[in-house]
Amino acid sequence: MLRVIPLGGLGEIGLNMMVCEAADAMLVVDAGLMFPEDHMLGVDFVIPDMSFVRLNRHRLKGLVLTHAHEDHIGALPFLLKDLHVPVFGTAFTLGLVRQKLAEFEIPVPAGLHLITPGQPLALDPFRIDFIRVGHSVVDGVGLAIHTPEGLLVHTGDFKISPGAAGGMSTDLNAFARCGERGVLALMSDSTNIERDGATLPDAQIGETLARIAARSPGRIIVYLQLPAGSEVSIELVSELPDERVLIITTGSQGEPMSALARMAAGTHKQIKIKKGDTVVLSSKFIPGNERAITRIIDNLYRRGAEVVYEKISDVHASGHAFRDELRLMINLTRPRYFIPIHGEYRHLVLHGRLAQETGIDRERVLLVENGQVIEFENGAARLQGCVGTGRVLIDGKGVGDVGRAVLKERRMLSEEGFVAVTLAFDEATGIIVYGPEILSKGFVFETETGHLLQDAHCVVLEVVEELPPETPHRIDRIRTRLQTELRQYFFYTIGRRPVILPFVMEV
Image 1 (cartoon, rainbow, N blue to C red):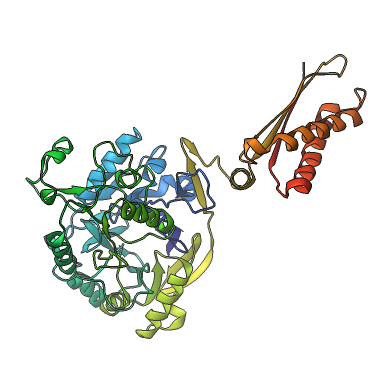
Image 2 (tube, rainbow, N blue to C red):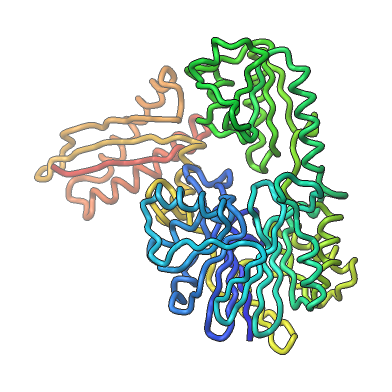
């Protein structure tokens, strides 16, 4: 029996991680992260719950990486902290993995192992052929996984872009050969299923960028590969004529502390945006980043720059296949079963419908979400239960210690602010010896808190008077009453619900 279990990446963008099990052996494909959603205040990033892999570590043969993007390799340090498993990837992918693991100071006792398209990898009972695919990062591969039950094809992230530079185009012949041998199941990237047609050729983007550069009167600020022999120190930029300067910078997704964000805000130490500058964002607006990106664009315009971005010019070629390319992948591989992966649930549904349009029977299109188990036996597939999965939030050095309760508190603090009340009682007499001191943050402007906080003092003292020193559990009851009475008071007077933090103690 063969089991395929997605632990992340189905029903969401990011967190890509897939498990294959056969003959008491386990293979993992990718271990990615996702960036926090709007409600995840203060969270740095999110990784999949990898408990299932840890529980089955004795069966784990290896971890195979399809390419070097964070949504496919970003969770590796957290998995390898306590798991000794060989990691397999292409040269560029392993180069970035080494740097990432060095940052986390994590050794890999089982090693990082180089794979190359055309050279199969044996991890008994699996044999994996690596197929070159084009994407928005070099050295990406799809996987043809030979199992006791049949051939699985995992496309990884891909697009079909003929004539891509450096031999980075998708090897359609290799996928077609898989189809000729017979494919039990195709797992295919669903990210751009909503986009009709095909992705723009890389060469067309190059021509567009060349035209923009030719007509720009001053400096050009862009994010591209750096041509060899054309680098100059940032300290010498001011000594060159503007029309000879092209600055490669980070910040195309609106990252708050990136170089481009600081340029747009006027806080970059060396580069000041001025009239005549051209800023090119050769990237797609990632969902969730739109407001941050448009804020930077607005600030760049305010400083006199001309800004070129995807919505107004063809300066970005997507790394994910559009509908025509996805249809071609299905036709080339001719799978018995089709499993859409890498996308939110609507993407999976639409990709499944496209598979049906190409002739795959509806009952052989498997719409699954994270944790659902697909079993293959004697050429037939079925959904058979679930394993534990989910999301683990990373905040600083904390792993999984931020949950719903903490996020709720952060949201409440961000929306209404807080009011802290400090009181100290004499332990023997029960008389107030300090306070009440009331401090508010994020609640109302300091110049407007006068009467509110003065009246709040009265509310605090009334609560204390109603609970005399002989009251059982007096301190705990004062804390509870202060939260209730102050919450009601502030809502009645100003219509807000700040978080009430009572600090009540005996000395």
